[in-house]
Image (spheres, rainbow, N blue to C red):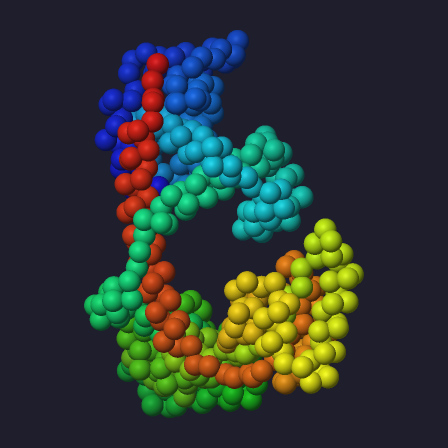
Length: 434
């Protein structure tokens, strides 16, 4: 919204005239006695009502106040809110023309995610909204609208974004790129404070205390448990530093972190502040990031109006029996498989990563012994028989780095193209502000 907001500010003077501001304020003032409404803008085939604008302004105001942010001048707030409503209207009309629909199941899942982000179940979230005087149905409608708009944006903007392999390679050699693909560490730290000028006897006693705690952790006790218990008698400080790139770690830990593997505790060491216990809770992007890949092939039989689901299953079972009887899998796949992407290749799926296939297919593939053929398994696509050809562990470190850079560059270009596209559709739309 930062890009959009900057755009809106440049339009503020043109969008809100004395008539519109007076109309909005008038309807707000009159709400105590009689609810008035009127059209404040015509947007192509849609209209925006004063009540709609007023409600959105109240929502924006409430959100800004809840975050402790300073409210902009009233005319700026109204103009920016109105232009956002205009852009929303344009995009919703595009969604209607394109036939964009959000299935209830997807909307339910989105509502559950919102509830979970607030640490609540869906029913608790509904009750919390009602206690705040807010409508669950209205929020559901708002989220549906946001999902429609997001799909319209992605459908129109993604096709304008291209990231070449050379762009990725060039960016990875820049200072910004090198930092982006730096390994990340999650360090948990505890400090047993000792003054730099403390007597040797006191320092040695503190070292022994730290070594005793370290021995317990190395023996398998939880770092958090050991330090929490020690805190009852020993004044210690520190905590979880969260995920940080190497350059963002305190300099004291920059040499230590790369030497550890996840779950390992560093040797106790001293600094001018005291004795440190440094535990590597996790790491990513450090190399050796392997995934278990499976090489398989399959034959897909789809039920049709002519071929019932049961008959499709029976055909898949018959093909399995024929292969086990000596017939060639590839030849039968070319003849019978209805997966147009792999049938010509004898059903060969190549190497697949975990999560790449639908769950029922992947679970069956994982449980099928090497060189054997599964019983028919049903997925949303139809009935499959699967032969597992090979399995391997593949180092994906470089692929992960390339994917991270590609995603970063794509998002940056997407934001730029989205801003340009929003300006374009706003300029092309018929907008009459009353």
